[in-house]
Length: 544
Image 1 (cartoon, one colour):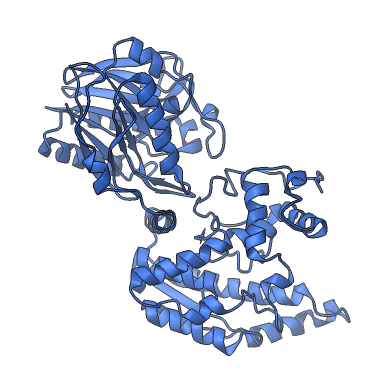
Image 2 (cartoon, one colour; image 1 turned 180 degrees about the horizontal axis):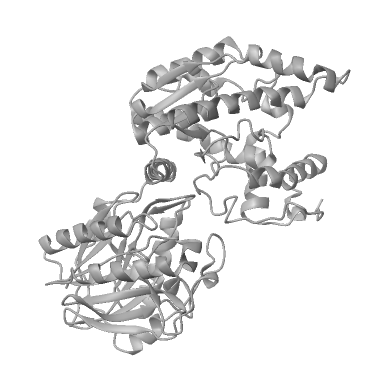
């Protein structure tokens, strides 16, 4: 039986647009002579709709769109994710099976995740009955995302009820290495069930999340027979042996060799590009602006924005202060010229002098310290927001995860912006990603001098990041253990000297108030700040 998996890029609440995308994929599936076409979890309303689900009008609009989608089921059967409403008013994360222009069956997701970025029990009631339905003459067991991740999910009961094929609709957010986790999990489920497993995943950016597609077809032996494209829309057609015994062998798995998974840094790079492109477009922007310092973070952000949006839609702004080195100024200009972006230079020295003169009486005889340093960063933030207001450009902030973790960033300064591209990217990943940007461009759009220069905020003479922070390789190991893996501080004693470790953890804990006010950014690691990690600001608990 030929089945099409439509990994599509939808937008939350864009019912007309989402229906058009589904209709386009259905047309492709007919051309490919598929008997059935399946779409991702909540493909009709978009995922995750969050508190829009509390609006009865939103749920009703989704049900009206479902009728339109069901009408497409002419000569082809459809499976699509939507929000169902029960007679008692409860709502369900659901899948509809459409046959001959009407909804023939409905399935309600049974396993509702409540961890990481997920809080589905806040909105949905859990289903209680597995579904096995007949499509194109085959018995199909239908599940939704978390249903297949949980050992106690519905798959075993579906097999006992005669399912020959298992189909899972998913909206599985990306983080580095997630595809390999999915493949191992689905291979295990296929072997346990001794049935083929087809998995269709959402693709696209939605606020801080990126969905990477990479739909999968796994045979009963746990072998990946086909793998959908990563980070782009695609229709994947799969010929599944059914009706002659559930363990019938498929042919050689040549398709998976034709489409191997991307290497780690390549997939991170693609996730960032997709996240930027969709956040800008889906929120109604065309152009972005960012501050460019001549450092590696702003250079990488500019390179990715130029690739994602086109250089004509990017403005790089150099805002030198009295402490900005000539080399850094030259590199800031060189990056913009190499990328072909617009370039502005707005020196901040006159504004800085005026601000310090205004503050002189209030500051009195106190020596210069971080207050004067942060005035510079906040002037830059003000100028970027002024350009945003005047021209309608979205401000991209350029800080990385290592800086956000420790609070080594200025609130209302370099943290200003509408979207933080590198917010979840550790500093030690920034360098290989910047090398990759050069390889993709086929030339050094980011000069070698940017890679060589020690990281510095250039807010006072001879300043480097390591005046305040541990070396970045060490810092990122601490962040991985303490933030992403939630290890107890006592388990980290082998990573760093006690005083340095205690100071670093204290910096991470105390920076929560800054992170709460930071712009959204793309989730790349298994545990990002924001929805993934929700710490109280007022918090006196200390492990060290």
